[in-house]
Length: 125
Length: 147
Image (cartoon, rainbow over all chains, first blue to last red; front, side, top):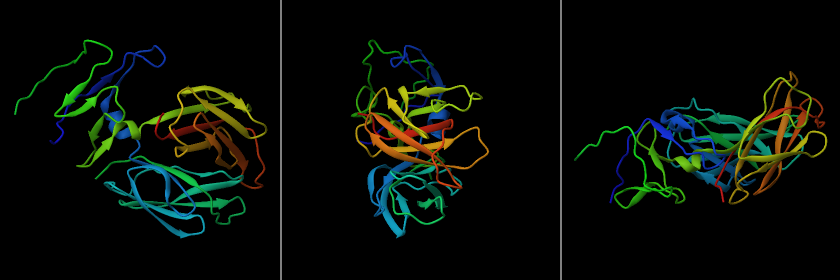
């Protein structure tokens, strides 16, 4: 059986976490939720992920991750962070509607095979 | 097909479930809320939400930002340039993402998700020019599956 649809503009909570009731326009839920994230291993596979399928190892510290559901354009944001090593950082090297590419770099500007993470914020196709 | 138009749906108890077909779309169950994205694809609200964030000044240095957080029980100064962010509600596994950005300083910093447990994430901040650890304010967001 196919799922149905509920349309609503405001989501309200009773404050079960900290006792403060809140409400939010559902546009913020739709536009503000991450559409894909992953913790990439050094072979570009995922330790865990959301809306991510296959990974490609493009070379040292250079990983691409394909989306299960594509983005509507390549103008999304994709903060990326290197993991588990000192003085390395990650850049968002490239963005496509079907994949995101990240790369780890040391402070001395050398590529580095380390785990990294990304989160994608934008609009789904 | 029928259409119901109303302003508020209020459950009879705190364990209220809204079910369409055989799928609970709002309930206490895991991964129960799915929404259609901007196009035709469906996306999970639970998995897409940021589960913890902080604007931290635990490592001192800056007082220009007002610290605030979500799902953070405490933060520990772990030595120069290192801060342990403890979650109020833990993650289900170590595969969660973590993004940290240094704040309030014109220098360029590297940041790493250096050591993680399901209950905490340790971040390090570095100077880009030298690779040396340095204390600074920072912001952090994490995404993943809660326990």
